[in-house]
Image (cartoon, rainbow, N blue to C red; front, side, top):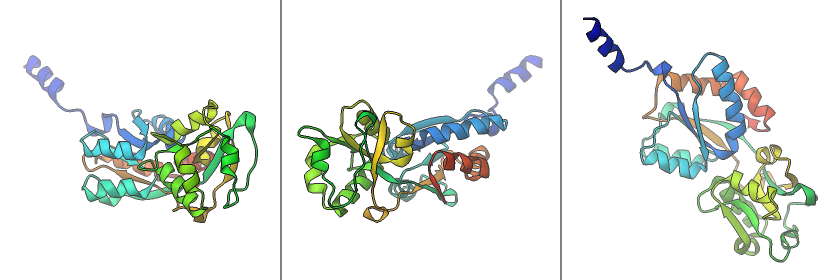
Length: 249
């Protein structure tokens, strides 16, 4: 009888609250969500597994069946993409944050420029330099960058000189290393780096509003996932986002 009881205990599934959560999130949320995860653990929960990358890459991984409880994108497009495929718990979607799009240069070549139609971006890049940003075909920061450069009449000149990256942190790294003389990233990414400085800020009306929608996935919709979502929307997490430079809505 005791042996049977032991076997039952070993094969019985663990309660959902005891299981680790998995969250897929845009690379630009890395530092803020790590801070928030630490607060979550301090509140008595298991550490969540955080997977960061381009919103597009993570969304496609979810589409292909990758297990995750929550998803946070750096634009509305990729949450729409998952919602259209019935992969999200629809009533959990919330656009919580905003950001600024900025032009960065290496810290040892710091300069200030006016980001408008008069911007001499060719002079900023030099004869052989490239402009680092996310791939505008699918990475949110690159999509915003293309919108802004088109609005300012600079896209045709810049397009052949893009260094397209898999996510915003990869673009940041190229500029940090001096491998690109300039880049376009979010203000919050520039803020975590001592290797770059912000040369200028793109006008808000030059691109679609930068939005960070969060949602619980349909496959990972558990009580603990919803509790973590509520925690992310709560005052302690909001204070972290503000400290990290996000615009909290």
